[in-house]
Structure formats: C-alpha cells, structure tokens
Image (cartoon, rainbow, N blue to C red):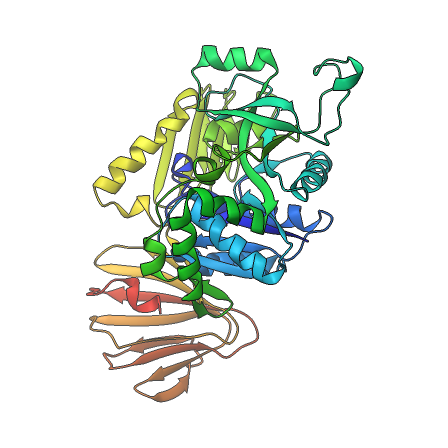
Length: 477
C-alpha cells in the first residue's frame, strides 16, 4: 500500500497578489480548471496502488482545503491542521505515524501540493521504480532531469547505480550509454550560481531536487529517531492530543510547537546511508514565479499569456491576468501584469521573483493585502468584501444549502440585508421569520441575529452597513 502524503502548507509569496497568506498558490487555479492542490490529488488518484491520501495544511486554510477536497470527490484518510509552520520534517513524522497505524507495512509518498507535472505516464513509471526500491528499505527522493541551468533549485549528484537498479554497468556500457533507473545519492548541493549550474547541466551527473519522496513509514521513522528523535517525540505527542474538527484534526499546538523546524532533506536525506534518487523527466515545475507561470502557459502568436478580460496592442512576451476588471496593455514587452480586486502588480518578467520584497513591505506595514483576499471561504459558505469604505461597507454573503450563521447583534447605524438569490430565514433575538417578499430587510440593533439558508441551493445576500463599528469578524463564526 502506498499512502500519498500531500504537503499543502506553503505561502507562495512570489505569486502575489494572487497568492496570499490565507490563500496561497497551492489553493489557486493557475494552470487550468483545478487548483494546484486538486491537481496533485487527482494526479496521484490515478496512479496504481495508491490509497486514500493524507493531507497536511495550515490551520488557517482548513475551510478552503475541505471545500476543494469535497469539490473533486476526494475522501482523505486524514487531514491534519498544523497550528504553526515547522517545515517538512515534523509533517512527515506526523504522516508516517498515521500511515503506520493504517498499515504497518505502508509506504508513504510525500508530495508538495503546488507542483506541475505534465507527463503523467513518465511520473507513474518513476513511482513504480521508487516503490520497488522503497520496499527494499531505500529512502527515495525524486530527482528532476534538468533541461536548463537553473539557479532557483537545489541539486542532487548521482552516485553509483543503486543495488537492483536497471543498468548495464557490468557489461561495459557507460552510465550515459545506458542510464540506471536509480542511483545512490552522492551529495545534496545548495542552489548554485549560473556558471556552476551550467557545469552541473553539462556533466549529466546532477538532478534538481524536486522535494518529492517515497519511503516505508517505519523506515523513515527509524531514521528520524536516529537523527532527530526530538521531532518524532513531539510529533507523536501532537498527534496523540490532536482535536477533531469535523473530518479534520488539529494537531496540539503545545506539543507541535516543541518540534524543531527542519526539512526532511536536512533532517534525514542528507544524513542517511539508505538514500536513493530516482531521476525522471516528466515536465516538472514548481511554478515558483510569474515567469514560470508564463513559461508553461498557452501563448498567442506574439508569445503572450493572457487570462481574463484583457485587451492588448503591440504587446509581446508578456503575462497579463485579470480577475475582475478590464486590463488593457499597449506597447509592452516582457512584462507581468496581474489584477485583483484590491491590488495590481506590474513587473518586469526578468525581475518577477523580486515581488517577495513587496510582500515583505506590505507585512511590515500591516497591510491586509499581504494576507487576505476580498473573498474568504468560511464554514457556512463565502464572504466577499465589495466596498470596504467606512461610510458604507458592502459585503456579499453566500450561504451553502442548510447553512446558518449567528452573531451577537450589531451596533451600526444601519444594517440591511438584501436577498440576491435563494431562500433565506432570519432569527432576531430568538424570533424566527422569513425574508419579506421584497427580499429587503433592515435590522435594528439586537442582542442576537442569525441568517439561515432554507432553500435547496445557495443563498446570496448583499449586506450594507452604515457607520460600521466592528470588522467582518462577527461573520467568521
């Protein structure tokens, strides 16, 4: 049994303003009709021998992750919520402990949730090769065969062909004439400068470190107890004291907080004597910048990637994305333009990764644009801020079928709800009533107010607040 472990806790700041702390890139639709997380789950669902996945994500993403899993019909073996980020080693320890409880002989395949893999057949072949070696006790990392001198990735140097690998090393053929399907890991190296990356590419002895792994749950736990026993102990305690939240599990914050922050690469893979690399070429990309999104996108005759309501004239080799408004471009070359309801990015393609410095400035200034979008997914549905002005705030509430929300009154000068679609009911100070035929309801100050969806489909309500004294937090419940 192979249990996929999908790590969905990254932040993706280099794809701002689309990617933000509370809705990072793995939760966005960047390459099609599904989000990166959904694509990862659907891709692995079709691989042979895969069991129900384990998903590990940030506690703050619980609702949107649950929504996205339900939307594609994936029923996970578990979804674990991290109360704080601790890098990949603690997450792998939690997943291995859970997988071992499901099946003492389980293999786990660790997958970041935000990668693109275009050649699924080649990817599945690599999984089969990895499984054969992992079942013999090897700790597998997947190495991407490089096609350019990339400075943004770490590299892995091939050692000798791994025991049991396909190779003609004993018949006189060279490694380049008949490459093995698996190699002993000789060395992990950090991100190189351009000249060094060119040397790596020319040598044919290096692969990019993809951040994907496969190993027996017991095998990796044994190695972690050998090298980082404090991580295993803290992860086990956090798992034992985890609190259920519906189908999700919130890891104990006190115990998980004791985990040192470390990657599985540093904690185990660079220290173990059982490491094996499976090279594969499957159109892999971690989509770490807007330039990377442009590179894999469908281009027009002038090399542009356009998305949304976009009109251009004399524009070439550019990426332009509109989420709501018309974006018009004239005389651009090699530019990135990304429009969202509350922020617009304009950047030179070659400097697109530097957007992270803008995000740092936003965080230092306490600007909400670094953290949240105008639309948020909540347990009962969605809330979208249409106009946040102090004089008259306007929000759109979308309640799922059967959903209810309550808050402890309001102290605004005026609070009005207007039904746009669906059927709703209101509760004011424990008295329940339907919306009037006009669909318009003005709420006087009250001690307790509730809104419910009494219809079979979504209930969409426009909320208008005059002289708002409190933030939208009262609706997050």
